[in-house]
Image (cartoon, rainbow over all chains, first blue to last red; front, side, top):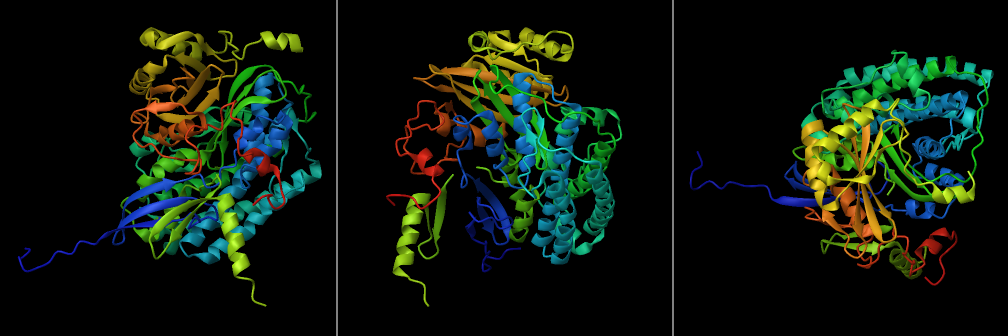
Length: 408
Length: 187
């Protein structure tokens, strides 16, 4: 068909750096997207803008200090890091904690999951431009935030777990309040589930977008809702239960939420259904909570041991590999946050999709950066990218502000 | 646990057979199949349920990974933890076998003066990021890594400094600076 006179125009390949300010979430991460017209043909993920050397700092801290350091790794899922470090130390010391403490710890984990998933749902609504649902869902997230504040004293950084148990007890009055709150929350979450599935403005933006086929998901070791949205049975709560998950899973009332869709829609459905499942789990935990002490005494010096503590955080499997050496400080503590594993699959998800869909695809793994201090400066005219350390950036910015005093 | 006793206890806590049959079964199958790749010292089933630690010869890590992928479909890769043991550096490859619900750790020791071992990133693409990270933080070189680049540290970080090693002396007092809260001195 092509006649010699006709010119075939190939859209030029352009590389667009997106970030380090994340287009979806307010955290640093850089994505170099190569586009042909509107299509993304290649993607490269750069992380490490937020490395705080927590593992190095931890080697000079006692286990109790590390507990609070661990919860500062992430603001949204602080309970998971805090609780997982506590259980790693308990495994290393071979201490069995009281049953009630296990139940309260698990309850905090599940409440954390509920608020994290609703937060994500709001971000997803916002990314596709559906801001009404974003604001409504965040309003209803306050129900679970209030619950957390009620029982732990803090909205975030609950620090409920300590080595040997938990720090605060739950009274009967608080239990009644929470059960009432769950009724309201469930009603709202069911509504958002229906909005997410039946509302065309949302569904059409996520249906078939960001495909992650099960074989690729397997190859890149996707975890959490990203993996479960591609039909992989990866849920530590069911595969490697700890704490109060053991009796809870044994009842058989709870099931792993899976979707075989593999696109952003699959991941969204998994998360929304997981919230409903988590609410039921919380109810079960509150209704079956045994009486008794909430804390066992653990000596500060922990015997030499190596422990791989696994826990299902809201974003996927969280690993703390702890090596103790007989003192009250760890010899080595390795943290693998779930997002780290999902980066590898990210590049694949982006390829072949439209540039306009990039924010929702990036948001769909629910990224959480716990990773250096350096900044990329992109010079628009010269088209150069320069990496600057934090100190130099500070010097430069101080100089700039000196030369450009604020206009009164 | 007293101090004098603590010196004698190793960090390896092998489990009794009762209650850990599935783990022992897997370990024995592995010992039958890939015995020449495994060092017996340091290979054991941990007391914590569903955990196996396996010490492997560093040059055989690819054989081990390939065998485990083929036979057990060990697709779920967790992470690589580096460790400084003094004369040796250690890399621990953590995997999960989802069908048997067992987490398995392959540890390999490489000498400090020549910390090299073959990469597994081409077999397990998920390991690409973390192998790079272990190389820059511990200086363990994965020979044949398909995409060598910086992950965590700044681009202007000196080439022969590995901050997670125990003997890293912090020449620019970065750790000290990170603890100050006010404006930094000398800037």
